[in-house]
Length: 310
Ligand SMILES: [Zn+2]
Image (cartoon, rainbow, N blue to C red; front, side, top):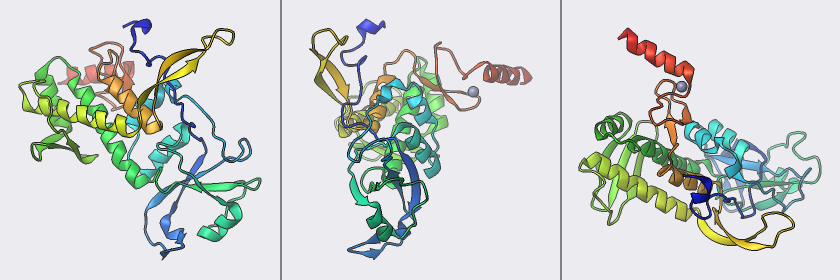
């Protein structure tokens, strides 16, 4: 498919919403927090705490960027481990996953508020520290990340012409259970049990039940989460060059980074050069040949040496 044939909105996608704030993320225990209504909260839960860099942006401003520019976004996401540290590392590189529902506290209030002494350099001017209770709360976030990672793996598995190979890969990756006529559960060793409500699913993708359910599952998962994260088509003013007339152009505008990720996953369903997991080292890579099995020459040689040894 050439670039000009891409679906409308695809080639010029960007995030129109206020954008994401790239800032240092640190984590701290909720046990350090004092809630005015509940008193001291004792829990080991971890929140993502984002410090707005007041040196380069005034409070209230955000830095727009285009997450679609970064080719590594989806492969980094697919390869990200489920630990808090790995998730925070990803957030520091690409920005927050959800909306910025900021409730600011002046730094002086904050010191009083959570009792944690501010590290030197955190605030060079009178700054504001933002906490995101409902945004990148890692507990909720991990749940959605598991689903997105499951969708990437399923698409990688079912994007193959040979049904025997698909079934073998399914058996090596997850097990399937039908909860009732409306819901399906897939169980992954490292991602846990993931449920999709398939409703009145369109069946008939394959005579093999495992393949059929995999399609229903991933279709509903992706449709639901692209909607939930506001992936919509919007007409926006657009200029080809600074001197040309302003015209309308369709854009796909996810509301947040999670929406960008679901949108990219949706594109994987029909991508000629999809993401694939290296059979040797497990790294996710974008394959350029349909029969590619490894991320590069090193892993390819290793696999062929193993095959010869057998
Ligand atoms: Zn490899």
